[in-house]
Amino acid sequence: MMTKMTMRRWLAPAVVMVALGTLVVADAASAQPPGGRGAHAGRMGRRGGPPLAGQLMHLRALDLSEAQREQIRSIHVQSGEATRAVDQRVRVARQALQDAVTADVVNEGAIRAVANELGMAEGEAAVHRAYLYAQVWQMLTPEQQVAAREAEAEMERRMGQRQQRMGERRERRQQHRQPHG
Image 1 (spheres, rainbow, N blue to C red):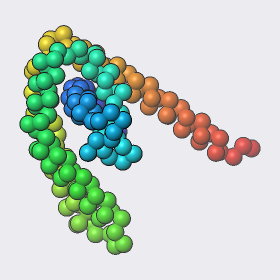
Image 2: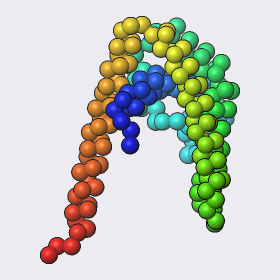
Image 3: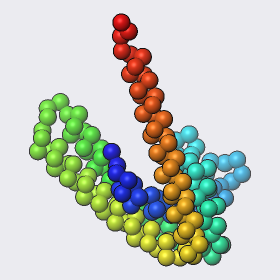
Image 4: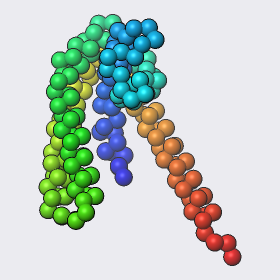
């Protein structure tokens, strides 16, 4: 379970990265033929990543200029290969850990080694995201930075409400499962 401080550390970068991802997806979507799926369509015809609607909310909150959008596109294009490489390393390490955990025979040494590799891969990915975040954050105006922080606070508030509702539902289910008597 994440602490509030941990959540705060990743939420601001997440808001900026969501904005960055939105520009890339919007740019790619505009290049697709009308009604077409494009060359890079994923499962069910969608591109990877979070739903576009959630991403656009953060973009509007930042009110980026066309020059800023272009800079973000450029950052994304320049970092594309490195981003794919670190993401692939994390995916491979996660799968290796899953395979080690679900193996027929428990091999604690192998599980720990693969878990360590996953930690290293996630660390590398986090550093990569931090550099991208810093590049995008530096090009935002002070007003946009405030808007990003406000969007972060709103996202945190909603996440807290969602967690509270989930906890309440869990408690109700547990109460219904207990024998009455």
